[in-house]
Image 1: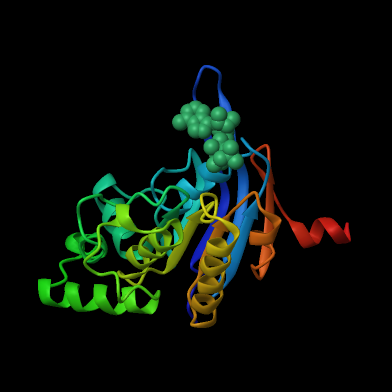
Image 2 (image 1 turned 180 degrees about the vertical axis):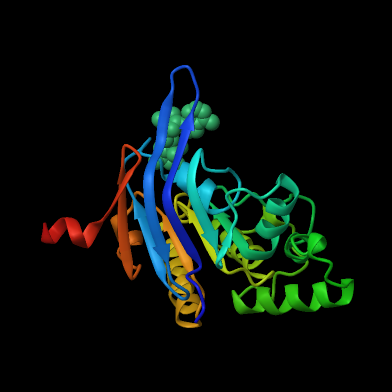
Length: 230
Ligand SMILES: Nc1ncnc2c1ncn2[C@@H]1O[C@H](COP(=O)(O)OP(=O)(O)OP(=O)(O)O)[C@@H](O)[C@H]1O
Ligand SMILES: [Mg+2]
């Protein structure tokens, strides 16, 4: 049996301060393979902190995090970086594309550390850009693209390494409603193809697209559906 993609138990993150902040408290979270989860909560509730933990950009102060069945909470910095590159894809509100590099190069660059041969890098980047509907923008500089196109480049960059988990932090935060809709439609398609996604958002229209919603308030997580029943 394949283990869940994410299995967090008793995970917390404390910022020593001062002032000391318990940004994430005692979180138990399982994300199964192929699941589409959204994480909602007010500003300052710990969403980005949790995303950084999930994405191995930060490590828990306590608790255990298993990613694809492997305990990653105690890995060395070097191994964590490697696992992150192989297994996690990130999409942020502010795209974070490299200017003055082509769309194709932006996507190819995310495979450099994965020891993928150059020719294969190009072929995979082209295929992934075609998958997100940008096959006609390969040689463009990202600064000449629309917001929606930029975010689709960022999604292609996140997907090209075939991650176990796609993490998105307010992926539609900088987009108008039409472009937001196309990014959400793409997420639906990727989910239907079996991708595991966790999307952080303030926006109910975005979180409502997921299969399961969890809410985080003052660092404490609860299932939204469970709240409704309670
Ligand atoms: N590096 C840090 N050092 C100290 N405190 C931090 C740090 N990062 C986050 N915090 C604190 O942890 C809490 C949660 O922050 P976080 O960024 O996770 O919130 P958020 O839910 O993502 O908010 P927003 O919706 O505004 O993005 C906040 O009180 C914040 O000030
Ligand atoms: Mg945040």
